[in-house]
Length: 188
Length: 188
Image (tube, rainbow over all chains, first blue to last red; front, side):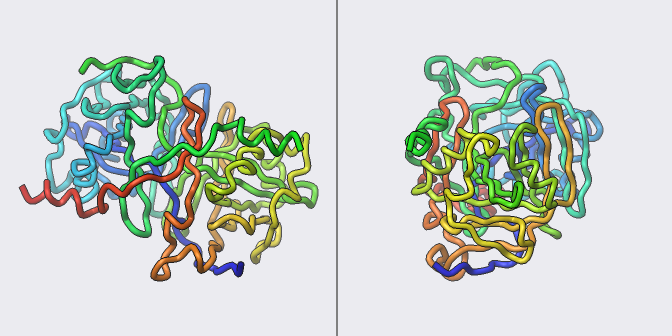
């Protein structure tokens, strides 16, 4: 099949959607993002990529802490709302119930199946975005999201975003076991 | 519901699975990863997070180029295979059909619905991993993956990975339109 050049821009691929939280002027604020990744195992470091103009960034810089909250599909409206209006223009502190871990200034969302409490370790600056690299100090879930004591992705029901169609999606069907299904090739 | 602390480690969330390619000793090599993210719009920059021990890293450093290849669900066995065996131990250069763009040393996989050709702009080093930040020089797809000239995620059929269960998944059902569904809240 003939390849078509699409020009260099943001690719179309599934991204988990999260709410990044910080304390700005003493109040919780949350912004919806889909650009983040783990960057190290030990210590567990995560990078969140934020447009420089976001209100939440101020709080991360003030407190050197932030949270990452993984919403469930039932929270899709509130999650999307946090992407449509800035903390500069609206008070988002009452939108969710919040709780805190040992860091005290990283507000986490009770309604989210999984939340991470992070300590800022490095900030990197690019043209339009900045990357906050945080160490995960603690992760929180609830018994109802576990199966055999492990977090169950289907019970968590995460929200996945794709950019070109601008849609949110659920996770679909299982298609294979990692570091297992490929062994069929290895043997041949 | 009572929150349960899970200890600080890699969270459970859906990650797109990609094959990162480079030329090592003049031959294409590919490694499967799920830790990557976009980091800037203009120019379009992407960060791939790689365990330092990977063979592919050598090629990225030698040529200052790499590719990111998004496999489809039909490619799950070959994709998984590339995560189970190192380029130090096996020649993966014949596993896929490859093609090149203007960079010449960033081997792209013909079978993948979407491939990115990247020029290395920065390398960041952490304890166990290193981050290669690349500028996307060109992106390639095929007509059959487009709908109304835009990349169609359902036609691309990407592979999603989750760590705790160690499974690959398809994308599921659409649950809402981004920057739209949240407006119901905004108006109230």
